[in-house]
Amino acid sequence: MSLIAFIGAIETGLLFGIVALGVFISFRVLDFPDLTVDGSLPLGAATAATLIVNGTNPFLACGAAFIAGGCAGLVTAWLNVRLGILHLLASILTMIALYSVNLRVMGKPNQALLGEETVFTPFENLIDLPYYWVTPIVLLAIVVVILVLLNLFLSSEIGLGMRATGVNARMASAQGIRTGKMKLTGIALSNAMVALAGALFAQIQGGADITMGVGVIVVGLAAVILGEATFSTRTIVLATIGCVVGSILYRVVVAVALNVDFIGLQAQDLKLVTAVLVILAMTLPNARKKWAKRKAVKGAL
Amino acid sequence: MIEAKDIHVTFNPGTAIENKALRGMSLTIPQSQFVTVIGSNGAGKSTILNVLAGEIHADAGQVKIDEEDVTDWSTHQRAELVARVFQDPMAGTCESLSIEENMALACGRGTRRGLSSAITSERKDFFREKIAVLGLGLENRLGDKMGLLSGGQRQAVSLVMATLNPMKILLLDEHTAALDPKTAAFVMELTEMLVQQGQLTTMMVTHSMRQALDHGQRTVMLHEGRVVLDVEGDQRKNMKVEDLLHMFEKVRGQEIDDDALLLG
Image 1 (cartoon, rainbow over the protein chains, first blue to last red):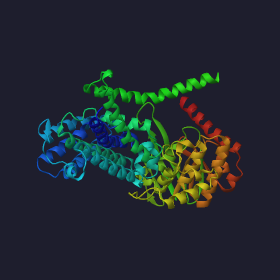
Image 2: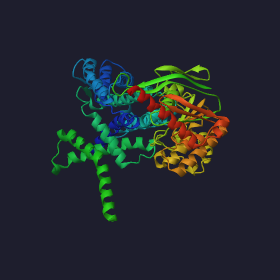
Image 3: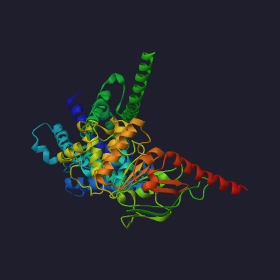
Image 4: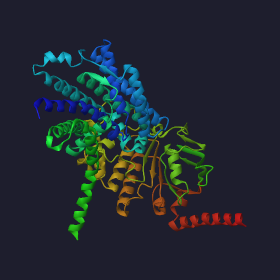
């Protein structure tokens, strides 16, 4: 594998690290299986790409994408909290609705960003390294800032209330926490982050596409699970860092798998490999426990 | 003062499994009184506790806390006035959060939560001091996950958590029922201490008649959603478990008579 391919894997890993952090908030912190992200990633991309093409400052465009994603999350959480629709279904409904919204935002199935100024442009002259280093370094800085802010939030009074809502909602409301409001806030934040990742993604790959969201939830979940398997989850800080580490690890593993010829895997097998990886990561820990138990019982006999 | 007036609660009304849990129950608890509530299964003990906590809303009747009508307040609105310890040790705490995080959550009861850090060094000192009273050595394990503690330890911490902030009433929902006798005795001792220390208005629901008579100043017996016995002072002092059992049989006997009448 070439250096450029390796750096490319890290770059994508960092970008999807932001997605993984969003998924971490919904799936892990709030225990809310939210599939909206499949729609909010392209929503962020579409919003940012359309705004940039129309002459908006790329940083402002990212902010707009963040807000758009937050609104998408609010819709999902509102469907669940206020209308009582099952969380999974509520998120699928928003995701489907977003498909149309995204087409409306762009006015067509894709929006190219070739030659446009992006958030990465100002740094191209600032960082005195070959061009392929610029994006990962800027992304790393963004991810670090997000990690710091997210951890400050999750260890604040409100953040702690949000975590309690996900673990034990009954206890949380007995402590005076508005669990509904926490879900609205958390799911909005989660999708806002994913949409921001979408906005950055569009600027890296040179455009937004209506299909770019397919399977994003599985990729994000894979990163979260991989992070948990390889990194400590003892504290919230470690758990969030784990998400980013998991995401990078996942991309590197995939890049290696696709680059090693004898396995025979090709780029189009990516989604299948991802699904299998998630299934394995979810079932292996349980299976391992069972084996260990059986062994222990046998040993005792 | 806590006042529950003519409370009616019916679960699954109009269906085959309709259950009239409370049928016009009234109970007034003056400030700083420790009331124990007993009754057989389905007598309405847990229901009245949940009505006071705001988890169940009465179909009819009124709940007042210090002259304020809180009948329509939700659980989180009432949290400022009501602290509770659940029967299930798992229910009262968050197992995947640390001891100090759980205590910080309890510290926020009745306050506006903001974006300031939930765990500060001052708070840690405060938690350490509060939890050292238990004598379980938990003051050195504040960072440990709640899930690592035993059921008894968790109930003990729950009690401390409930008493961190001021309240109008402390609700104890059979909080020793899931514990072994020795641990239960320890948790009861701790309860007595905290209640006396803070002069707390307390309502303890229990299955054990022994516990109901040994603790607190007043005992209320429920049957079929109503108060059938309410004793305090000398009358209660002279009461033995056998007397309570006798009372129990008496109300049950009446029930059988009623049925006999109906069938006849």
